[in-house]
Image (tube, rainbow, N blue to C red; front, side):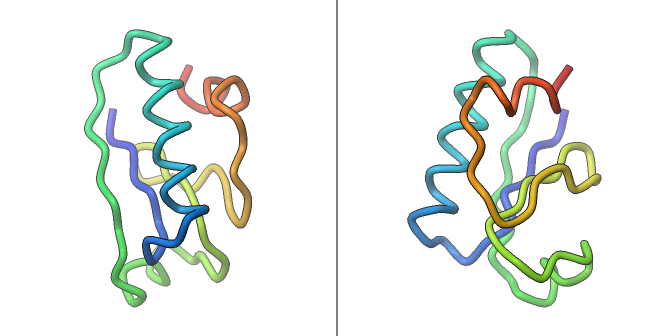
Length: 76
């Protein structure tokens, strides 16, 4: 599973990365975590507000930082 954090590296982006990793580890899934910080790459996802989370190329969360429990629903 490919997990991508879309954002410029702000505190919210870092928190989303932490929560996403915690959710993936809790579910015991194999994943790679990529941080996409280039604005043009972020815009190619159609994202206008960061942070955002993409799972296997599909944007699941935009502009907020859900807790690990909420993120688990996107990873199942």
